[in-house]
Amino acid sequence: MPHTYEYPRPSLTVDAVVFGFDDQDLKVLLIQRALEPFAGNWALPGGFVQMEEPLEAAVRRELREETGVSNVYLEQLFTFGDPERDPRGRVVSVAYYGLVKLSEHHVLAATDARNAAWFPVTDLPPLAFDHDRILETAHRRLQGKVRYQPIGFELLPKHFTLSQLQHLYETVLERPLDKRNFRKKILAMGLLIDTGEIEQDVSHRAARLFAFNQKKYQALEKKGFNFEI
Amino acid sequence: MPHTYEYPRPSLTVDAVVFGFDDQDLKVLLIQRALEPFAGNWALPGGFVQMEEPLEAAVRRELREETGVSNVYLEQLFTFGDPERDPRGRVVSVAYYGLVKLSEHHVLAATDARNAAWFPVTDLPPLAFDHDRILETAHRRLQGKVRYQPIGFELLPKHFTLSQLQHLYETVLERPLDKRNFRKKILAMGLLIDTGEIEQDVSHRAARLFAFNQKKYQALEKKGFNFEI
DNA sequence: TCAAAAGTGTTAACCATACACCCATGC
DNA sequence: GCATGGGTGTATGGTTAACACTTTTGA
Image (tube, rainbow over all chains, first blue to last red; front, side, top):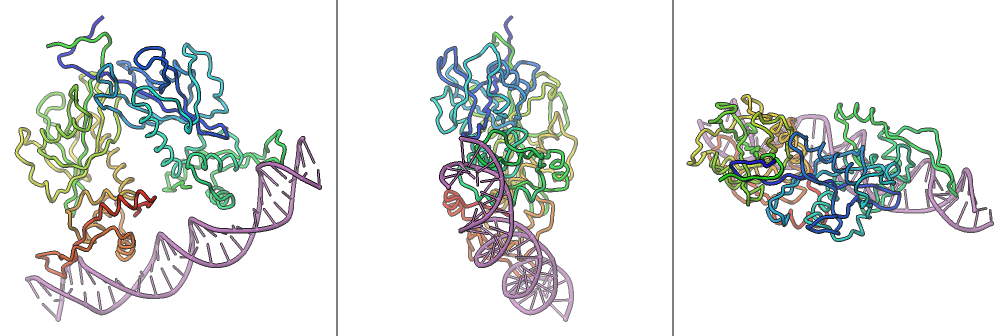
């Protein structure tokens, strides 16, 4: 069933740069391409937008189909439209970036595409198309945004220690932070709930576990409060 | 000459939210639609992306064709893809926002579309499609970005007084700024060149004219300097 | 008892804010 | 000489940045 138009139309795709954090590295979710072009290469999950489908729904669908990952914090990143970016012809891609609690996603759930894997952003394979550019754009956006929006919590388990949080910021921002100043600042915001729990099974003093108070943040935000690290 | 594809494809358009500043108001460039849908309504300049044309080139072309405006500072804003946003069918639009020196553009140059005009952002006509949403998104982006990137200068003449600059910030941010603190801060950055010239034809003490030192900013930026108002 | 990470305060430098008057110019 | 906006300094409070030791726990 062919579709005919008076003027030629570019193809429209979505791509997702999904970040995860495993207490050690910042990681990105990639899939291995089965088909040409770039068969065998690693690439960002993504695919064609369906006719009646909102863009964000398309990314979520592709992510689920290709990697089994769902329940992701997503934001639109940038639309890449260089006429040369895809050898098959004009393909414009709306890229999103996503943040995921790796603690709840390390198993890539059963799916038709099992060739998905997490790679440290510091050690990436060659990528298909212009996906290295997309990934770099997403990485820079994450670095910029994490400092003045509380999105870092999307990468941590619901309950986390202050050291985990600090380490996350240090990893994303690629610079060390002072422990006392970090704790002072983050606790002074009053956005963390002390869960009363402590770490389990660690071979040193167990740290307290905190949770991010999303509701309080939303209330403060309306009053003009600005989160900032 | 029809074009046939195996799967249906959305149409792809670009739209531009171009801001100007006239020492009084922040203004937006709109065109009056000649054709249905929304014939007679005001709308953002924009149109279909051609097959071999980069997205930004498409916005610049449409801007020139529809409004005669060229030589605009442009950044990609957001891609709007709600399936219901255009009554004609699925149309995905990549929106850009632009900044223009009104002092150099108040004459809308000769063009095929003469139905273009500047409107104060505080007093807009009803807009076609979802263009009010796009405009609102652009306005918020401008308010956010102007504070930590020196893009405000794109809205002023090459040579400007500190009062003009302050007034621009007050207009964009919609709040008053302290004159002495503003001058102190902006001059302390060392990014303004005193041109040695002064205002002409004013009925009060003439102010000094400054220029933004783009080169110095780019050099400082590389070293990690952050512009901030 | 050692290793490993948790937890905790103080000081000094800097920056942001609040605030009011004199100056130059044209009419 | 008056109206208009140009131009300037200081004091205060708050914020950031630098910095090191004690505590808890498990092995």
